[in-house]
Length: 158
Image (cartoon, rainbow, N blue to C red; front, side, top):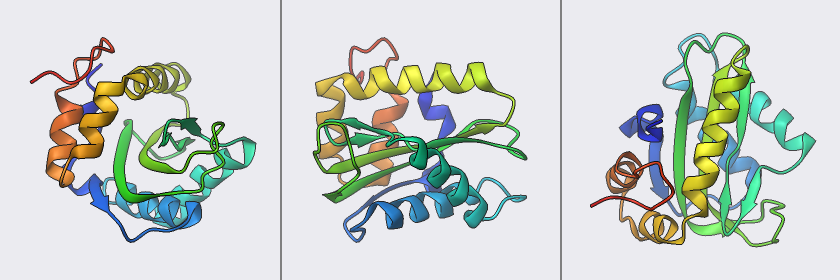
């Protein structure tokens, strides 16, 4: 699976202006709503925050994957933010989170949802991939890094 296909340039950002978990989830919801004309950013936020109430989607090492299954979503879609300064995200290692990959999938897509999460976990477990993403200067570079990740956990390809 090419994770980059879930993203679009308007849903990838590098920013330093967000200082809380709630605000970053709101921002991701706004970004995701650009691809979902039948859903408001508020509905998307509620899906993401409901999942967070079950337990943090922070993976550790400064990464979180907020996600949700939502009625009305036809295809999996994602947004990616790289924060200049990490936010407290209740991650298992208690480290601030600066890389967030938000995912929405159709309500009935349990298998696809799990497959994408597993792929993302592999991608974000690779130290060289994390370093490449963190060194990206802008959203376009972030998107290129994700699109060129080879999917085998071996990091981004040149």
